[in-house]
Structures are given as C-alpha cells and as structure tokens.
Length: 384
Image 1: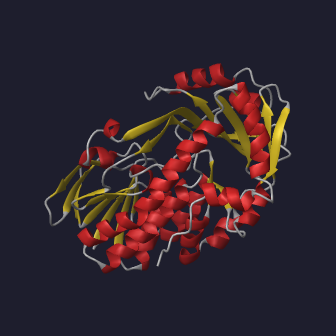
Image 2: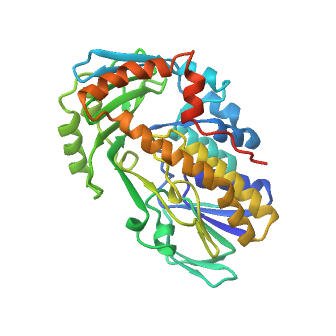
C-alpha cells in the first residue's frame, strides 16, 4: 500500500512514523520550505504520550521540554490577579505531561522518518482524482502520481478537504476569537513558566522556552473570519494590546516572521464524515479542537496511530470506518470542552474576570486538580 500524506506537521509526520512501523509506504508533501515549525509551544498529553512511547520518542521529547513552573496572570496594568503551578498539573498526570516548542517537536518527528520515506517540501496537491481503485494526485510542480490512499493532514484550512469535500466555509465553526503566536527573544527573564495579562475580551502572554526566548500567545474576541496580510495583522495586534506593559510590550516590538508565526481565526472543523472514497482527513483538517482545549496535537497523534493500525489489518473502507468510530467520541467531547473553555479563557466582563481570578487557582490547586483534569482533560484512548 502506498499512501500520500499531505501536510508535514505533527499529524502527518506521526502518521508517517506509524505507517512505517507496519511496513506501509508513506510519501509526505509539505507546502512550506522546511515544514511549519511555528513560534508557539504545544502540550504533549496522555494520548500523545502513549503514541510517543510506542514510537520510542518520549525521551527525545523530554530532553527538549520547556521548564515547568509557576504561571502568573496579571491585569492589563501589570497587577497580579492569580497564579498556579504547571508542576501540579504534571503531577496530576503522573508525569505524562510536558510542553515543547513546536520547532523542537517537528525536528524530533522529522528525524524519526527522514531517510525512511520521502518528504517533499514546497509541494502540495492541486487536484485529486479518485476512481475507486486508487487516487491520482496532481502536484503543484505539475507532476502526477498514483496512490492507494490520500490523507489530508494539512491543517484546518486544508487543501485536501477543499478539493475532496467542498468549500472551507462549509465546515468552519468560528468560536468568536482570533489568535496569534510567534517566537520572541526575551529582553529580561520572565521569572516563571508563563506570564500573561487578562482584560475584558483579551488575553495575551509569554511562555518561557528555556533558551532565552519565549513563545507568545495572544487571543481576543473577534467575530471576523477573513484573512489579513502581515501589515494588517500588526495593526490589529497593536490596537488590541499595544497599551499593555511588559512583557507584552516588548513582544509586540519584536520582529515577526509571518511565514512561521500564527495569526488566524479560532475555529473548529465540523464534518459529518472524515473520509470519502480513498481520501481521509486527520487532525485539524478533520476536526480542529483549537488551542483552547490544549489537546490538539495529542489527539492528532492518537488519530494517526489508530488510522495506521486500522489500515494495516483491514481493507481501506473498513479501516476508515473503524478509525472514525474510534476517534469520533473523543473529538466530540474535546470540541465541547474547547467551546466551554473559551468563555472562561477570554472574560466577557470585569465581573467574569474577577470570578475567573478567584475560581481558577482553586480548581488548579492540589486538592482539586484531579477533579478538574477529569472534567477538562482528554481520557486515555485504547490505542491497541
């Protein structure tokens, strides 16, 4: 079986590694020059951790993990609202939790598959022709190849989804926010794992990467879904956060490489089915939990592992049906969690912000953390 994976991010590279374990030949194409490493951090949670264990990558991820420590939340004038400690969260997860920069995560996954399968950068698909016995893929360089299956792992603005299932807007569920993230050098140490600021309809902050840089994450209430050019993005960020003090002020002054940075609508993807014939979607292309759930990468990794395992032992039709049946309940649950979190993550009023400042430290404290995790974290999947 020869499988085309469109998208060389966490979902696509994990799938490639899992397929190789079963002796299945993957070909990966990625439209970016060297993969989209991004400027933000990602979390490895229980389901991603289980996949990393089976791929023998846990120690590599641990070696590149960001430091876990206190998180401080301030108001927009720099006054402390509340704090909690990521180490408490890690303890509740029995140590199977870490944060890692997306660039490091991408490098580790790439090393796991490079030399074992083709990875074609600056390449994507422009057309897909499924005749029932295989799929002819036409690439951006004009070449044409035939595959037994095509997997769209190319993000929530998926080209594969648009080609095979219909317009992007048909499946987009905006949550009413926009977000942006990029990497910045630190002018001064943060003194914590995270320092963020909260205001009505806004939240922004920096995560210490442990190497003298930080990953930013800004989110604000915005109903628009149109794409913005880099100059307009900077203008929007300055209007929303430009009056905030350090460390936000220095982050906004920094140069932003928009080829690696993120700026987009916060939206989920909702589809009645993730496959059509010999074309199937994975990760954000299929469901997009959004960063609000904090489980997107781990859920995509679990989906990749399950999809590869099903393809190794069933016909493609049976495999795709089983893959969706096993993943759909978790995705539905975590999409619901993401929508609920959004209303707390971005307070809609001063009262809401004050309630959040009072409730969150309690819910994330040692006496309550296991209860909170059971309500918000993804349950472990039976992968095998």
